[in-house]
Length: 154
Picture 1 (cartoon, rainbow, N blue to C red):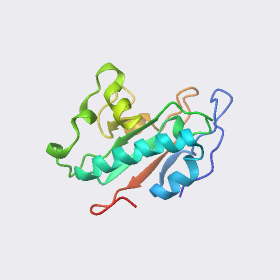
Picture 2: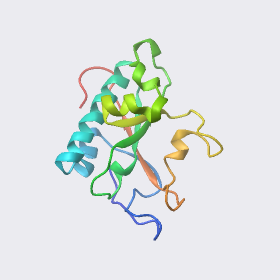
Picture 3: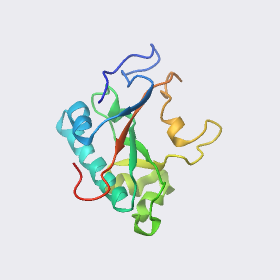
């Protein structure tokens, strides 16, 4: 379930998810965040990347970025994926192309996805990084979506 957004202080320009990892389905995420034509377009990109990851054996994706905030017109979405049990031979190579500020990912999927447990510098992993609000430095939440192992995405 997607919790209500909260304010984390005056330095954060938009409400964010409360701290923690919040489990939600694709349908719940769509209901909460795909609320305008632009947000629906971004969500379609996220669904496509989730399907590509699922095909390679990914079981969990995390969704973040301004898409999961109260920002009226987010530029894209950000997220990360759990690589455990994946077959990288089946992974779309664009998801491993981090050159040119991930331009290929943005062009193909409308957002950016990172391996969740890869080091993102002194702050820890990407999963850790995405749980900090970038303007205030305050803790915030992230959405975790369990992907169905077989069949079409729910």
